Amino acid sequence: MVLFICTDCILRNQQSKRVPTGGVKLNIKSQKKFLELRGQIAKKGLNVAKLAKMIGVTGTCLYQKMAGRTEFKLNEIRQISEILDCDYNFFK
Image 1 (cartoon, one colour):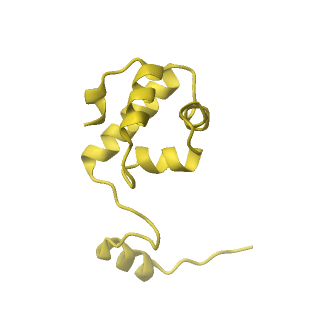
Image 2: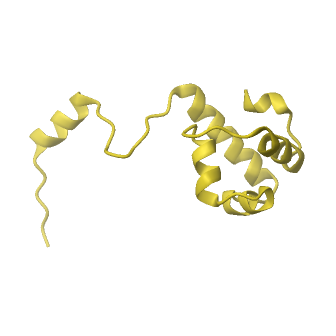
């Protein structure tokens, strides 16, 4: 099977800087926090799904909160801080 890609279409998409339908473009600060939190989770030998189960939310819900699409509740911040041994200020 051979796939032909129109280079004009690629250039137009790059120039428009549009976010794909249903996507959320994260700013640099939230991307950095997301990666830091993923690192903290991995350091404890966990993954997002396991951490989500520990705090009583779904993996999808926690992932959306980590990505900045929805906000953490105060009790979730407390639980995650205790589990990951990190400061509350990490979530600012």
